[in-house]
Length: 409
Ligand code: UDP
Image (cartoon, rainbow, N blue to C red):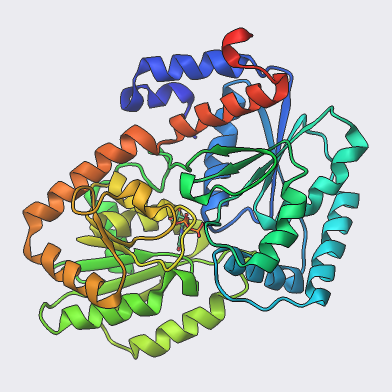
């Protein structure tokens, strides 16, 4: 596991010194993160990297999970889709089941933190416990979803709980909501020193390609994503098929499953149906034990990375690809436009045809594609590395806990 000083060569000494100074201000306070999965998806990805570094900076950070059965996660996946603006029908019985499971978690979770940091709708009603502690704890609700146009019934249900927190955090300005509590805009981040993002020797990249029987002399187009309709893997296959009429190339779709996402199998079988055993379409489900190095290798081996999401909270996969200086073609949704300026640091698209057009353009213009990747790398370096994220969170904790600006401490 990297140490905080290992980031000096990437971001410079000043930034690391500053983190150490502000980390000191939280000595003796415990930050307790609570979410619904430790494996799969962006939230788990970030917490796994962030918690050890926070601890090294002196911010005692710990991580707990809520428990819920299959039915609970089916309901929370519906919430997830509805908050992303999809039309979803949720019955009163489902709202009741959600609340029952939240109540069971309230009984079993030990709320030991001075700051309770609840992530996403799955944990939102834990706030019912707040009144037991008076003002002694600060409660933050962190929303990782694009809630710019939420389905009103579900948002109103979630909102009644959000309003009771001391603060909320959203990933992008466009997601901010009309709320009576403070909203902080903090975008997610990637860790440049993680197995997912560190430099890899060519032998490792080649061995991963061999393992998955991917040809080395044909352009590779890749989308890395949970198998989720909102990531539009079927649309990626359609775009690929349009391109392949003109250019010989291969497609990799690589995904894992998050334990709180029940739709994986359904989406994966649709994807396989659409691919129809095409030998140039590699549909991979990466084993958790090898996941990070393999994803890293697949991203590095790619000529183009796609993230054709229909809705997206932030899209860590975009930052990961840009960090590796890859040209990225991505849906112009959610947090993706924060990461990509069209035709400067990547390409934003809205349709299957647009995606296919740009895949062809970039395969035919490698110099332009390289420039997009380089600009993207610079942008990620300046905005979406874990060091910036650590700073934003520590400042938020200090502000909330002491209810004053750090400069007055
Ligand atoms: N990911 C992974 N293995 C996979 C598919 C995805 O490790 O097979 C990772 C991906 O590299 C990224 C995270 O899961 O770090 C997904 O985060 P993102 O914000 O892109 O989407 P989310 O799944 O949170 O909607």
